[in-house]
Length: 509
Ligand SMILES: Cc1cc2nc3c(=O)[nH]c(=O)nc-3n(C[C@H](O)[C@H](O)[C@H](O)COP(=O)(O)OP(=O)(O)OC[C@H]3O[C@@H](n4cnc5c(N)ncnc54)[C@H](O)[C@@H]3O)c2cc1C
Image (cartoon, rainbow, N blue to C red; front, top):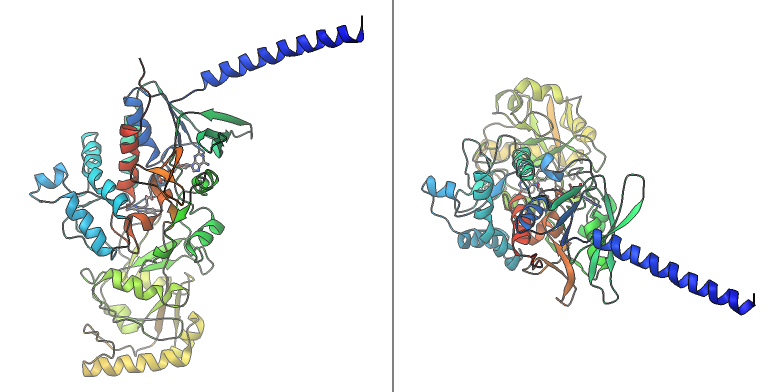
């Protein structure tokens, strides 16, 4: 046989093999063709999946964890919504327009008005849906705000089981979901599939054995949560160290990586704000929260003083606005402060500390508070103010001068910072200091989207085929440079629901 004959047979057989392999590949792509891929089976991802599947769409949810629910396992689960059936039943007249106005007021105009409008206009529908599906809220709700700057109306709801109560309802909804909805757990999405023009065609994910697979669909929703489990990414996006260890451990920010590699961008770093009242479990950062001080004047007027690392007071401790206190803390070194008091105040003041999850959510007794000194790293006690300052890491000379000045103001009734609630001086040993750390539970900066929740490029053009919802958008988008109650959970659920109901999914005959 001639060399050319061998060559022709070889070419023909190779061509046949290539054709067979591409037929097989086409078949496997067709078999794995979905209408919608959702990255993450959490707060935003589950409603997106449920509502899209109810429209007949073939939906694939890819979940990195071995279980669904994401941050709902830990979340306080407080939801804000205006115009709900439950509000009407209680005679509360409220509207999304007033909710929007409150958020823009509290955030001093720094929240993203378009995205907040979409959130508040869909919030009541979300609460009504969950309530119809069996979610019940605790006694005492709704409230205007708890621990955050209050709204003008009582529109914040919370269930005794917090976020878990919402998850239980979503899990129940999953049991009756159409068969066109599939959830693939223990599958970590790692990167997008892009065409030559940059449109997103799906994602690449790997299973527990590390085997990578392509998953393709015309629409991909990033609902993979924020990036609290990625300390370096948190710091680079928010411009501050990650002081608090919080959030769902799977949420390392893959949505940020995917969004950016598809041309998207991150916004909102300028909205970073830290909360007030958090006692860290240890002195290394990021530290979990041990407990919270009761700093809401409507619940407890202050008996103690607040000082920074320099041993100086920086606000009147009875300042009524939570938001103003948070902004003042933001200007202090390391966003850190200490509550300082004495034996008289320890024994006579109303409960100061409240347990935080995973501990019991109740006020500590005086004895429990006394027992924490010498045991919990953030709690320091000493026989003199100088020793207290040295032990706690505060400037000793300034602390003594600050306490002297406060005591003089307390005696005369004229405090240098204008504080009026001063029941006792600080003078009977032992003395006490509790270190507090301002921090966030949620990254403030997040992936930019438009009012259809399409991931956008810096010029505002949408990335074809890519959407985002949930914490990935950043707290700053929905609350601006402020903390607005219930403005992460409700928007995550609502945006998932909105995408499920409104994505331009192809009609199925
Ligand atoms: C302690 C705490 C208390 C809070 N309390 C409140 C509150 O009371 N009210 C409020 O409004 N907000 C609160 N929040 C915030 C709110 O709960 C969250 O922002 C919200 O639940 C996040 O929803 P999500 O859908 O974006 O993320 P999640 O619900 O976390 O869902 C993301 C999912 O994506 C999965 N995932 C991550 N990476 C990948 C990957 N590579 N591939 C596949 N899957 C992936 C995760 O495993 C997870 O299941 C709180 C947060 C914390 C931490």
